[in-house]
Image 1 (tube, rainbow, N blue to C red):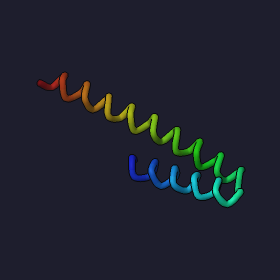
Image 2 (image 1 turned 180 degrees about the vertical axis):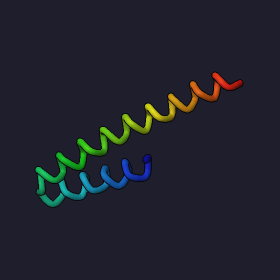
Image 3 (image 1 turned 90 degrees about the vertical axis):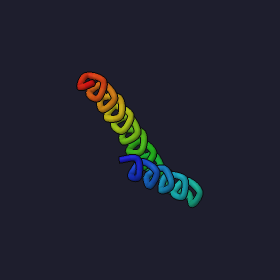
Length: 53
């Protein structure tokens, strides 16, 4: 999940550098959503590991 977030961030940066504003905005939004999903999964994983111990 984090790998895809980094890929979309790099895509957004490259698209913004070359003037593709719409593509850059879409890639940045996707990266933001993936980042929040990743953080949520990490927090959920931590809570579930505490629950088992």
